[in-house]
Picture (spheres, rainbow, N blue to C red):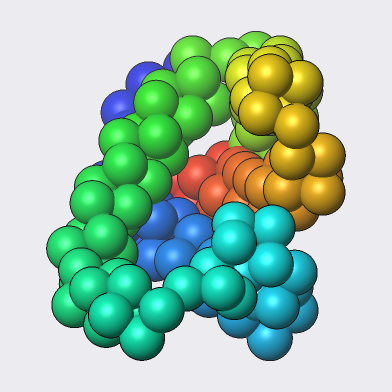
Length: 138
């Protein structure tokens, strides 16, 4: 069994997650996200402050994504399920077992049900794509 992690695949998965997120929270569901977060009621000063912090936010999100996909890659290379199927299966299992329950807790206690569905949908697509990249690129 090859248990070496392909860092190039981890990097590409992290980049893919940023692309997916920009499409998901942009043209697909951007307006809904803004409304659910209350951003549609922000003052011009609040909007400017957010825009000024965007590059830092993107950089931190990229680092977080890289770490997440490194861990996902580790699960994939140590799993009995290999290849694209193994990557997708591991990603789905981790999404269902960790992402959904954590997000559900936030929705239950925070009361933002639409945001729950929006965020777990994004994470499902992101993790499945990353799983396919990490499992298929050996």
